[in-house]
Amino acid sequence: MIWRWLGALLLFPVQMLYLVVKAAVCLVLPPRLRDLSRDSVLVTGGGRGIGRHLAREFARRGARKIILWGRTEKCLKETTEEIRMMGTECHYFICDVGNREEVYRQAKAVREKVGDITILVNNAAVVHGKSLMDSDDDALLKSQHINTLGQFWTTKAFLPRMLELQNGHIVCLNSVLALSAIPGAIDYCTSKASSFAFMESLTLGLLDCPGVNATTVLPFHTSTEMFQGMRIRFPSLFPPLKPETVARRTVEAVQMNQAFLLLPWTMHVLVILKSILPQAALEEIHKFSGSYTCMNTFKGRT
Image (cartoon, rainbow, N blue to C red; front, side):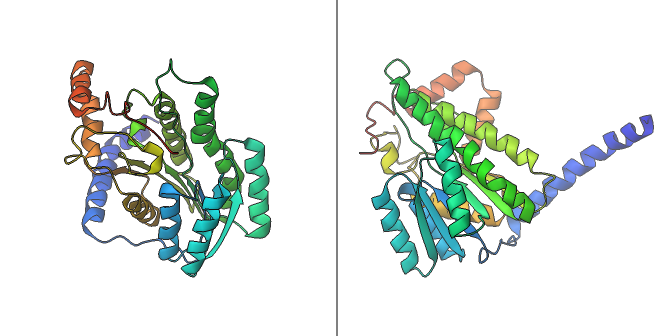
């Protein structure tokens, strides 16, 4: 037994070196992309914002079917018509992902009307945009139900069939605020941190499940209606991301089977700094960058 442990101990650094070299090679050589022509993609929050751009991008890259979930029928109809004009089959269902019974009911309706879902994109999210003491309790609960628990319900609804088919992908549109919280968005930061832990655990749990994978996307501030009014101190140095850019990079990450994606790449520096700098230094960085006050002018989606 001791020789087996010793062999595993000696082999481990060799495995780590191989994986690092393999990752470096993949950065240089063009990867083999997943063919989406047989995939049915469901996008929550698909009527507007990043969700609408995700639907467009999946359709543009040849997805077989697009299914949209959301709470506003007008937006869902508009996006559905746009996707159909692109020549892709598209359906929409009114669904509040924060409502467990509604998620399971609409998931059953999707399977009966459209068929199996092979790519689930958990994109739906809300932000209350206030401090803890100024927050309404119901609004705080709403953020947790939609941003976090909604992913539990949607994943439980569609993952079992993906495992049976040995074909599936769970995608989470998260936020860099899951890793570096800011004042004034305590509901959003908390829910996104919980969502990140959910996806990290799920990704590890799928390692022994052939054909089923997961991708978590953590973008910087994106110029959508949801964060309307948010101001960054140095917008020329740290411009907000365009939703179409986030959508394009997300679909590419799915096709490359990339587990985690930080946008832009400079956000990796933030993760490193949080790991090595003392809290006092991190606080000064927040003050200098203006993240302490960036939500003071927040208006949100009207």
